[in-house]
Image (cartoon, rainbow, N blue to C red; front, side, top):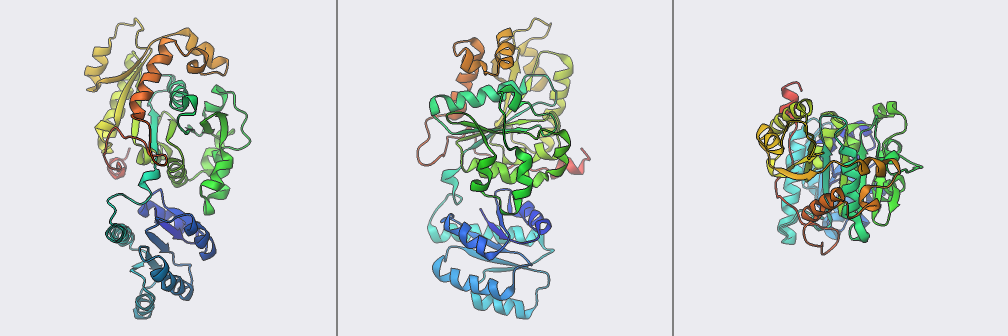
Length: 397
């Protein structure tokens, strides 16, 4: 993942939107040196316009000897012959105008290609240490989305087999903390004050442990705190968690807001939750069409039918026909689910042999695949790339 050196947070956010949400931002060259000691597979250093040219040249001159696989990319407000000459002498690989965001993206892509050529690796740097982001989404509230996310997280982390982090991305009305009866000292809102130097050692104290192998990054206590959280920060947080956990299970708000869209960009597998009622099916149908507009890959989508045995005049077959999706997980109706939730103990822990627990546990096993080997890498159900959001925005959604 590229490391961006830039003291202006506004500039840094713009650059991250181009270089990728997994980019790391540091404010000065001293922080960069500390970060690089923890990043042996780094392939690109982006030096922003606030970095002194002489210091940038000195760094590049050192790195071309000590870390020849690292490409130094210099961003300047004005690119002239003196800047180009200094960059050439010091061994920088690219110089990009501050306004040329397309050029910056291309430079980072070329840096990755150089890294692969010099190292002989076919993998993206640090790919072996990446986990999987599983996003639980529904456009309709009250369908059991949070209960599913919590129990899925518990199932994935059972017996300490995997490291799992639950992220509550319903930033106004998140319920993961109350569902697990957690009393967190910190929430995701605390990351706002730390974002200039955000890395995992900085982020980790914001997590609240629930049980062995399972922790949570909870939503803010006050709903208006949502307005202080930049959407780009969500992408950076999920990327950091992905590199440090086997699974990151994200519970989302029932809306296509900027935070949910950021989560989609990091998502490896999506669980789309519906129930057997016409209003929910209508909303989920619209959500499926919106996901098509977003180019979110169909193989990454998994339909979950909650309260699947309700006798309400609709069948599972009608759901599949309406949504043109096969049901990947059917969760039966049970009052014990609500009882377990009200007691602060997920049903998988309270009643592991209950049909609901067994259904979610089986699905978790399918999602996880074979046990991971080497770091926290896990088997993926698909190999499809990152979804795009531009089409949705052009259509005014």
